[in-house]
Image (cartoon, rainbow over all chains, first blue to last red; front, side, top):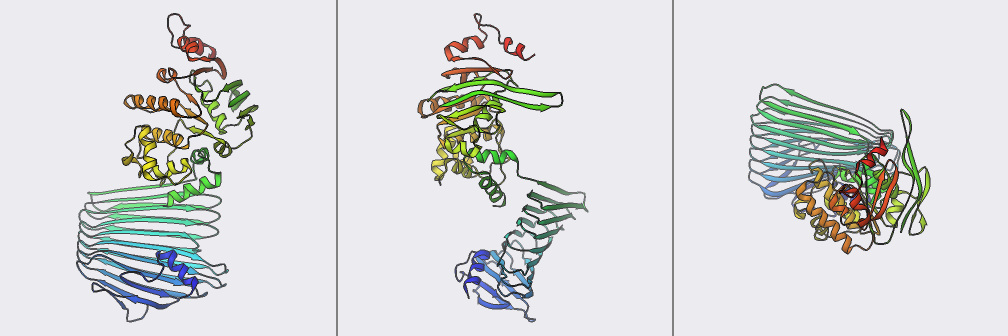
Length: 305
Length: 244
């Protein structure tokens, strides 16, 4: 693996070398490394376009790293990965996609991740997107996440895209059975002429299921963002969706939260706010000795932390 | 150490121009504890903002340690050694109390060291250090964190704009102790905008501002009896009459 790929790996998965536990590293469309454990098996799908990850019931405190890194300009790939998290398991899955495009052709990674979270299982899913390279070719990532949560399961999804992705279209669909709980934290920053679209469709199907979708984003320069979330309450359930955005320069943001109650005991809340950095926030930090630029960076970093 | 020379400031309103500060001249000496008081709307907060550079005077000069700082930015003034506690503290989503204290101290303070400043303002430090400076904190809590940031800076001049505003009666006693301690231990000057008798009582000097002008300026012993409305002193109403 060359230096560029190593840097990408560090950015998207905080990995400086081979991770502990189970992993599958995909570099420029090829498998670059794989490890399985007694409890976690990774197999290549029959069509060769992705992997299936099987986590045995009751597996505790183990992790799976599945980074995807691209440094070849003009590479377009679609990968489908399925994750089967056994009943009562408690695991962390760290995915991430990094693209370095030094050429003039579009590099694109479309990933479809399907999660089947077993009864009373607990899953933390972390996804980081990063792009760099000084070529004119666009860096494009379109992740689709499909989540099926069984009774009493818990899933926390953390997705971060802070730098360098020119165009992204994110789609997340989830179905929750009785007592299941989904927490999503999305952090997004766009700059230059970037375009980002994020959509959540969450169906609270089972009794006492709950979801909390929190998106925080910053749009700078001439970038464009759109956020759409729809929570559907189909049972006695609780749902909350919140989109909070800081707008800067000549950026544009649209936010469309939607809640649909198909059951009288569905309790759903949506909140959405877009605004620029408050002047008194900058002033306060300047009274502590920061310059206006430093104050702005501090506020943005804190907001996206 | 701080000298305001003939400071004037006005704003444009629908009825025309409104004078907020009218030719104010004031000197704050080394290690002095000066309380500025007077009726609401008299120009006290505007004067405090002038010192920090949040507002710029239309005319006049501001000198700090002999240096003309009239045209200096907020950041430059902060780095020269001026601190400011806002009357209405600012909320920051995602910024933790520890982050703010570290920014104020300008060094990577340990959590234990940062806690000392919170304890000084009467907050149980371990409950607060990792909280976000956001809407989940009450007005009084935010106010005390605001004061802690000024303590953490430890500069030559600290300006507090109505530190008592938004603090409940029970915490107020504690706040007085904070200022008493600052007065004893800080090597610098303190300017406080306040209406509180307990704060006026610990001042070296008291300045009364009304209708954009300095009405009185003298030692605590000279001014306090007059403004407390004792039998021998003129009524406090005289200050308001000027505004009418």
